[in-house]
Image (tube, rainbow, N blue to C red; front, side, top):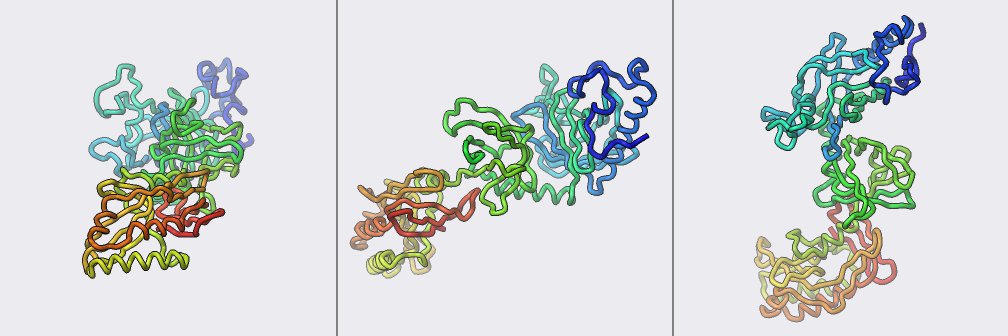
Length: 455
């Protein structure tokens, strides 16, 4: 008999009743002589043998991209190594591990079996410390606490219908809750895979930049709170009209959604980092996920309630006019007190009485340069469109520290700050130093203004 092809789809070779496998889960039994003759029974045996060979023949085992039946729970990277004896070793570091091992790497050996039901079923049929918590009928918000009334728990599965199988990918679907699980060969050690995935997650999904543009080049929607692994897909950031919950599993290259989605018909499911590191791109490069870094920059520079330090100017990029003003500020500060010196100028918010956002001066108050004080002048900083910002210094106000410096002999500080701020008036394009969580940016004037670098 001819072997099953390398990439096969369940149902095409042995399902009768004229139904595909995803819906024919109640009638056709391989053991039933009324439906299957000997060749058909032999075909399913061969298929099951081929699946097991594929599962066993992965040198480093499999990454198991595991989802439960609850959309507001993220996907999990588990790991599995199968043996011909029926032994399987499963590993993971998820937050539902018990016995004090939450978020700690754990391996646990148990048993698996290939079953003949309506088609091949991969069954993890004994307790496994890594996998079974997802199946256990407990309230997952307090696991392993009280049993929930309906006994569903986290709606995880341990028996999976095999949808397709190849050396590169095995697709499974939970028998009870229909969540999708994907196996891909692991090309590294399991702990190295976890480390690489954590690094990527922390790079693309920080606690500072939590929103993302999703665009096909024509239409744009948004992902909100991607870091949670279960996030909102919506048409706008504030007060979305039609939000939907989407969950994903992070990978060393980016992330993969539980289900295929689309933006105005353009499909996407998995994203990886673009070659230039400016965004994440879908499998065929048709959809891009771009961190809302431009709105973050404006918020970072204008949020007076934030305790973050201002971003400072790179003095090497000052124009001749800016150098003259900067040196004048340094001179009047040192003239007022020989132990005082100018530390930096930057954009951001002051934290003293009468806090303002705009131009921020920081001065050292001792010769050892261990004590500082900031003073600021307000400026209007706003986002005009993606990647562009407008700066205006009209009608400024000053925080209380500007007045305090002037009272202590720093002559004309307010006027000098206004003169420097005027050199910044204009509209700029922004090039961040990190497109997922900037810690600085290059600002290039479109018409009016002076090119400058913040760091």
